[in-house]
Length: 304
Length: 156
Image (cartoon, rainbow over all chains, first blue to last red; front, side, top):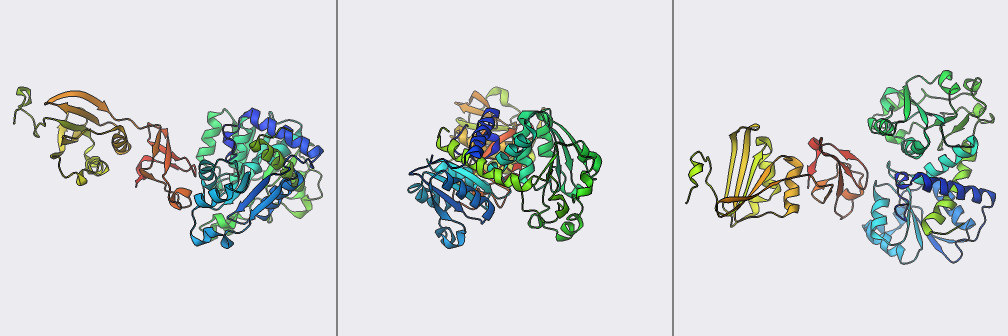
């Protein structure tokens, strides 16, 4: 990687991605390897995120490292007005690695510039969340046996959903075809469509979520229409129930189709889908552990 | 004051030594003056002219500052609002160098990020922007990755 910190998926080359995914596969075969013996990792969650924090802390524990940190900035000196820089430099005195989630965009990049120890971005506002992208890529490769030439349909909030934006960047090395299914208000922004054009990536936009599109797909990537992203709550009420996947819609789908979702879901995947073998979102979250073990070793320069 | 014989039609007085900033779009003249902090210069003779006829672009603005030579960082400030200006460096009434201003690849400080949730608006630190499109003057925040179009640029 260009930097020893992982701040954004676009700093990873194709080779970086494939190396991290290969290592994640080794961790799936055996998650318990004492590669962080004697090391201390700090998990600094300036904004709470239980799922991501538990996944990272489990990864550190399974690697034999120790964890320090906080899960709520209100109990730390940042609530007294300490700068992020000072907090990062203070923690850098103690830890070998910082994993951070922050509500401000660009916080992880700035942190990586003020300290000499590696930073892993566990989400900075609506900006980047590269370990999520890595686990998505891992799940896609694991279920499809490859990353090349796949048709991926993204459904829901494509305007504010950072996971889908990052997944486009991560998949851009592998000649994908995308279907973007979203209401007009939440359609894929021009910036991402321009990115696809520049990288000769085929994409099709739809406002209707139909079986015809599902039947062409290898991956169905569902996203939550998040209430907190809306300034206009009437608009939220209008679109929140539009893009719901029901089991009956999967009848004519490909055998290899798998349904992914970054979780938590609210109602965009009906519960009758859960028992369909094509539902993969729970296993997908489990893959996050292996991907994060691989990322931690990558930034620390540990060979597996 | 000595006047070059070719300068019969000079509309503003010539300077002996200093900088003449020419071809400033009239609508940006005062912005350029402000970016160069001309209001803080106490000891330089400054001539500001606007809406002068121009062969190239209809009308133009012009600023002459005696005994002042700008360094590149100061010049970068102008490129943001007036990318086509020409700086004439004057020594002993002669133009010894014509400088074009150009947007640098990166702008450190100077521009404020428009995103209120950007770390740069919440931490005592310098902003940093990459110039992603010179033609349109589009910048991208190095931290929050938000793009800002030329017309929306806020100068700190």
